[in-house]
Length: 341
Image 1 (tube, one colour):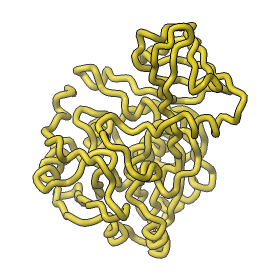
Image 2 (image 1 turned 45 degrees about the horizontal axis):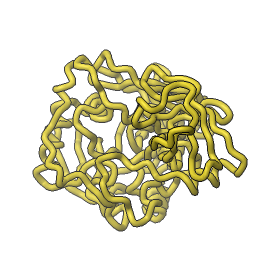
Image 3 (image 1 turned 45 degrees about the vertical axis):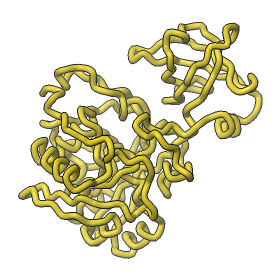
Image 4 (image 1 turned 135 degrees about the vertical axis):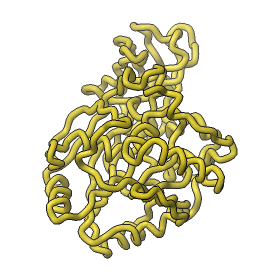
C-alpha cells in the first residue's frame, strides 16, 4: 500500500493545543464497524457502550521528563536530547537535535554539569546511544533538568503538566503519553468497574516506534522501532477469562493493541511475558486479541492511522475523519476520542 492512501486534509485550527476540563468532557465519535454508522457523544458516555464482563485494557506507563537541554563540552554548542529507551544501567537510546553536533564520542553537560553524558554510538534510525554519569538520584535530576516531551504540534504548554499523564500512570519510562487514556477520570473508571467491567493494566513504554514518521512510499518497507512491554500473569488470566465467557476485549489506545497483539497466540489467548515489540499493524492484518478500540484522532500518514485503518477499514476510517473535521472535533494528543465497535 502507498503512503498517500493514508493522507487527509486537516485544518490547523483543529489541532488541540490544550486539553478540555474535566478530562471526560471531550467528545467521543462512536464508529460501528458493521454498517459504518456514527454517533456523536462525549467521553463520559463510554460506559453505555460497555457490557458486564468486558475487559477494558489500559496502558499504565508514565511519561518521564524526557526532553533535556545540554551543551557540548569544549564548545558550549546547545543540544536537545530526548530520552527514548533505557537499555541497561545508565545507558539510554536517545534522539538529538541538531545531530551534526553530536558524533560518537561527544561529551555533553546538563545543568551546571551535575549530569553528564558520553555518546557511545549512533543507531540505524539516526539516534544516539548515551551513557549518563551523575551523583544525585537520577529521578531528582530528571525532575529538575527535564521537560515533559510534548509533541511538536502542541505549541502551548498545558497549565498543569499532569494533564499529559493518565490518571492511572504507574511505571515511569515513556517518551510520550498513551493519549487515548487521557480522557479517563477516577470517577469514570469507578463507574465502569461498578458496571461489571474488568479494568486491566498492561505496560508499553512509548518510544520512537509510536511517533517515528513513515518516510517510504511503500508502507510495507517501513521498519518499526522496538518498544518495551510487559503483561503480568494476573492480567493475562483476566483478559482470557473475559474472552472465554464470550465477552469483549476493549483496548484503550494503539499501544494496548500492539502489546496484546504481540502476546496473543493464533487462538487469541493472551500469554504473559515481557520484552520488546516492533509489531507493525496496517490493513490486511488479522486481529487476534481485541474486539473494540478507544483511540484518539491520528496524524495523516502515520503508523497509528494505519493501525486503526486495519481495524475498521481504511475507507471507513477516512470517512469518519472527514465527518470529524466537518463537525469540528479536536485532533491529536489533547483532542477528542473515537470508540470503534
